[in-house]
Every structure is written in C-alpha cells, then in structure tokens.
Length: 498
Image 1 (cartoon, one colour):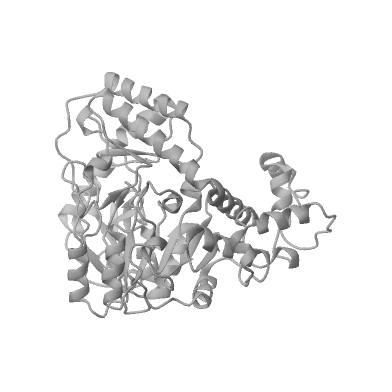
Image 2: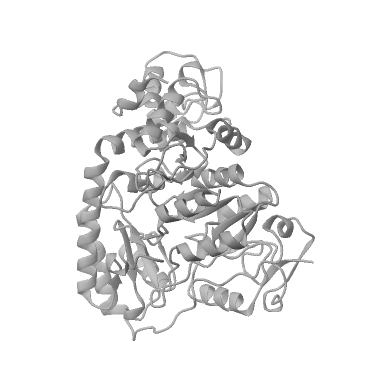
C-alpha cells in the first residue's frame, strides 16, 4: 500500500476512474442492459443521462468490489485513514449489510453475543441466519421521555461475568436519539475479558470529524464499526462503510488494544451476502463523501452543531416542547450526547410524537425522521440550513397553538424486558402457525415485530409473547405507528412456534 494514498485525502479514486471512463468511447457489450441509458429512455429522462452513463459494471479500469486491487482498494485505504481504522470496506447493501457482516464475523451457531435489547432489526436477523444466541442487556428507559438509554458498565460487566463464554459485546452508539454509552470504558472492559467489541455506529458517521462530539468507535478502540455514510455523511441512500480496528490502541487508553480481526477474513464474510454487481453510483458517492468529510468535516459539523443548538433554544422557548440536550448527561446510562440530534419531546403539549410527526408532514410539508409515542426527531446533517429550521420552529409553534391539548402524563414503556425461550434461528425456522392476536399470550414468537423507524424489535423470534407486549402494540396501532415485520400486516394474527 502506498503511503501517498493515506496522505492524499483530496483524491477520490473511484470517482476519478469513472470520469476517465465516461470520457472514453467504450462500446458496451456488457451489463447493465440499458447501455448508458439508450435502452430505457424514460428512465434516462427521469434520472438524467449522467447518472445512467455512470451506472456501469465492474471492469478492469474500475476494479471489482468483491476483490479490489486498484481504484476501489485505494478508496478503501483512504476511507480507513479518514476514520482512523485499520481497514474499511465499501458496503452497497446499506448499513444493514455492514451490521450483519459484523455479527457473522464475531459469532457462529451457538455462540453468545451480548447485545442491548434496543438493537436494530438487522442484528436479530443476522442471528437468525448465523445461529448466534443473544444475551440481552436492559438499556433502561428515561422515565419522562420514554427513550432507551445507553449500556452501563455495571450491567455489561454483569452480563460478561454470567456469560464468560460470550464472543463479543455489541453496542449501539449513538442511539437514534443521540444517547451515548461509555464506549471507551465498554471496550476496555470487554477486552479485559477477551471479548471483541462491535459497534453499530449507523447514526454516528460525524463523530470522527468533530472534537465537539462524543468519541467514535475507532477512537475508543472498538474492533469493528458499521457507519451509515448516507445518514449524516452525504452519500447516496444504501451506501455505508464497515470499519475494522483493534490493531491500534485507542486514543483514550493507549494500553487498550485487543487481538486484531483479520480484514481478509472480513472480506470473505462480506462476500457471502453482498452483491457481486456493486453500484458505481453508490461507490463513487461514498468515495466523494469521504473526501469531503476528510477535508472539510470539522467545519461542516461544527456548523451542524451550531444549527442544532440554535433550534433547541428556539423550540424550548415556544413552551411545552422539550428539545433535549447535554443537560441529560449523567456519566452512566447517558454517558454523552450527540448534539446534532434534534429530539423533541411532545407530551407536554398533549400530543404524541407520532401525531406531531404526522401534522408536520400533512399540514406543513415538513418531513421529520420519525415519531414515537413521546418524541419526534429532526435528523440534522451537512445539507441542512437555518431557514428550514426556522420553518420547523414556526410550524411547531402553530401546532401547539392550534392542536395542543392538556399534557399527556403517561406513556407505555419503550423497553419491554424480553423473555427468551429459543434462539432467534430455532424459532424462525421452527414449525409455526398463525393464531389470533388476542390469544397469543404465553406463546413463543416466530417472527419479529417492530415500529419502523427506528426498527427496534418489540418482539423477536424465540421470545415469549406477554400481555405487556400486546398492550404496547395495540397502543402503537392506535397512535398510527407503522408496524412492520409481521407476516400478517394487520396484526390480526401472530406467527408463533407450534
């Protein structure tokens, strides 16, 4: 590997190779079949000739995603350098594919994986496929806000001591709501017991690029991290990075260095499921977005932080709403807070978060990231502007004035302790049947059910169905939450193990 690549972050090897290709008069007797858009004029008119020209297949000058030796390899080395990782992989199946590759790397059939219960559905699905067994850690929930919190060192240590044969600890950091665990402490704890640490950093692409934000997974010395570049990094939807660390000591603790994960093995794992026809639109968007963050990330995210702080102050001045901030930090289950996240607690104005979400979209043409029972989230990143935030503040003020009610003083617990009877794989592939929703208490679920977003399972395969779970789902339906995962989308029936 040439050190020049690592020093030269103003390069974008994949994008440069595509530029060179587009300037040549190549006759395309390969796929894709639209042949630079000529074979599908309606799609070309819709997406633009430039996009269709660059939608090409792997070839010698453009390298191969499954076995990169030139421009993709160079781009991956630049990405690794930008994120402080030992290796980086371009993922074109979304961060879901990166999360699943992490699980497949550290756990096989029957292996235990210590996870917080508020993991994304992709983690549960990965365990269905590889046969790993979850050891859940209760993240707890904030009593007033109803949101899941971080993992505490004491809870994870208890899980480790009770399951010394576990292979790894899985951490969400930050959560959808911007809540961060003591990642450095968790890495040091797990490594001291010979366990790996893998981090779902889907909502933390930006952490690497600002000293004003919580520590990133690679800085903390984690062994692997999945990074959603498309969420806050500016790349195209469905593009992500998978990062591998572990060889280097963490910046927080130079002594914290676990046995390394072999990047060559990770590549083999990725190739089990990732497409052999990676989209060069996705790949070039990752390449160019990495370049921009590496060169300008600090100034870009400092601006995002300023906008978020401004919006928090203005929203809290309306009255009733509560835009949460660093005041929640307690050094334990809220060890730190991602200030770019604009989470708005709505119950004091008498409206559920999902109701405010719907009103903003239906009445004010403002699309929020999601709404739950007590909160809604505006996802701020490199493309936002102050004037849009001013429009959001004005709309929230009008909603309070025109639709506000007496404060809602209670809401269902956002975390329901699971009763695990079977592994996700055993339950998913077991003989199953559909039974009426109201008759399912005491049975074992054979499917995942969740409110999406954020895609955290309320019920996962192998878990006992309780009355508390059913009450939660009834309330979610009543409030208009989008419930996904169940084969019967109406939830009139649930799929259970026979």
